[in-house]
Amino acid sequence: MELAVIFSERKVYTETDPLKIQLDQGVHEIVGYTGAYGIHRNAVKVTCSHITFVGKGKDHTTIRGGFKVHNQRNVKFEELAVMNQSRYGLELEGSETTVDVLKCVVKECGWTGMSVKDGATVTATQCEFVENGEFGVLCHGANTKARLNNCKMHHNGEAGLNAYLDAVVDLHGTKTDIHSNKEHGILADSRGKVNIHLPSQHNTSHDNDEQDRYQELGGSIANINADGTFTHVVEDDDDDN
Image 1 (spheres, rainbow, N blue to C red):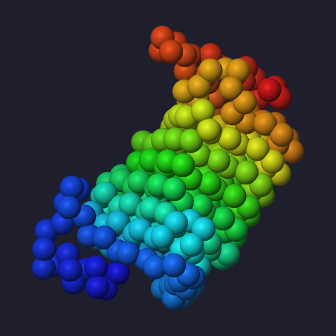
Image 2 (image 1 turned 135 degrees about the horizontal axis):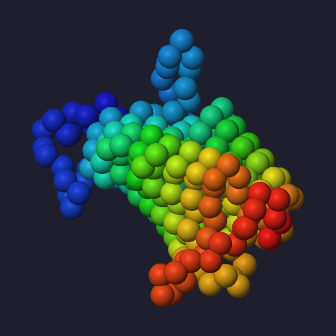
């Protein structure tokens, strides 16, 4: 990131001409930084907009540690495996944050695979969020938006997907698959909303240890029909659908 800052000072990078950080095959260890109260964070702070981190494939390039993005635009992660046993894999926050995640796997993180909060906007495509301590994906806070295209969330310690506190998540793609999580598959809590842009018969969430789809405290889970109308899959807090 120190080199990225130097490069960004020498040239103006844009959405169509981003700074690209190429990561070779193998395992890359993140040194991290000291955060509040002197606590060490095993993560890289992304301090530039218009930057892409690209590996050689999620089976070939592994990051041991996490990434934190706060109020940076057009940040991309491509073809990587991210593992942070201490906290989050991807921590994306702030109303100015826009992030794309493509063909990545975020796994074995101590807390949550991908946390999206405080108004951030994120698109993840063909990604897996697996075997994380809490949630595969957690989105929370007003104006927080996530679009998940053909993503898989499975074998996480709590829910595969949690939309919390007014966050909105849109699920697209017939390869979307949420299963084998130790609690719920999809959780919509405290006015969080999950819109499933798939037919109601699509097996989006299945074989989770508790409810496959669960909403509480004003949360909403609905299938969006082709004509724009919606069908609420879960009608009350105690349904197990």
